[in-house]
Image: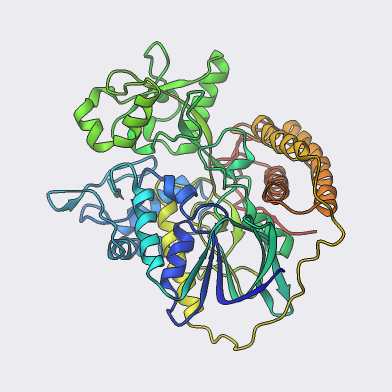
Length: 519
């Protein structure tokens, strides 16, 4: 029998943004944490690089702000960036209070640099920063009696009434029952949508769930054309989604062709330390014009001892595939990595729907502009999750909870055509990779829009005919998010940052955001 669960705050997603939000909420509030898989299975856990923050006298807030805005190609919100940057040192301190032990040398933070940064300001835990943060945050969450964790549960849709958002319908993947989670406040922290692409550095959970749900509920979705392609994913048939951290280039790694020839000097005077959009396009161009499958990243000159201390995870992973990075370069290709657009929010993470918040990669706060600067993502998660919780803590919550009807599955039946879901899933991702990738054109975008419209009709019909499953929910969200990306890309008649259109190669003098609203 479907049940109705009641909480003061419902948090959908358990990456860094979701966990920090939960921990910063008052212990007087009852909190539900929803994880669509195991609680640590998400992009935050796999983040290798680190978190950017001004932590030395050689650096300052203005430098960090200007670097971020420069990487964002003129589209970043200066005040939002300032808010994030000025709160960065406090974010690092709060993580240390949760038990995170950042790598240090002689009792000082070991700071590295990455693309777009003019100073060494990236604090890290070897090359497993995300993993260490998530493990420590989870331990803190598990020690809080007011927080209930629900694993293997996926949100179907948000619950709305005259007062705004009041929770969500949640599918329990263990018993296939849809349950009502009623809440006074709801926080979407579901991550990005890079699984919309055939090749991605993201885990399987990044299917745009929160963006699609928010769109269906009436939220403004902004700048979704800006999908960041990480320049360097390991190129190997068995290396699914394994990222070669930006820090490898930050520590001197050089991009070369198979014959050892360097090429980044032809594209930008910052070479390997240019922002990610420039590096990804450079690699993509070399691969296409030369007809090659990959390029190579060489860090072998650092030696095995240094590599084992600085990049132990990358060293071990490459070694498992027969690649000794202390003796040979690493084969790499670009892959969809980060969603710079998302649900429009203010500095308190509020959306345009009452009682609904969004934090982390799912949100558009304005800090990334047209291209995220490396290691600003975990920072954004923590800073805005804290401001979100602070705002909720300051609200007077009602004592009574609204009532919603049970999920009605009386007019649908179990599907006997699961192959249809798998086929459409694969087709969407290939369309996005081939027609809405690193380099775009009007013709490609129009084809993608036409075919995705047809697929969406098929998926909608399927959704209304058969019992919901986790795969069907993700497919429904994936195609809707893909449509939003395409419509946003068509709306932008220029090339800027991560969006490069062969028919509009120049950057416009007008600074605009593309907003997609439910029609």
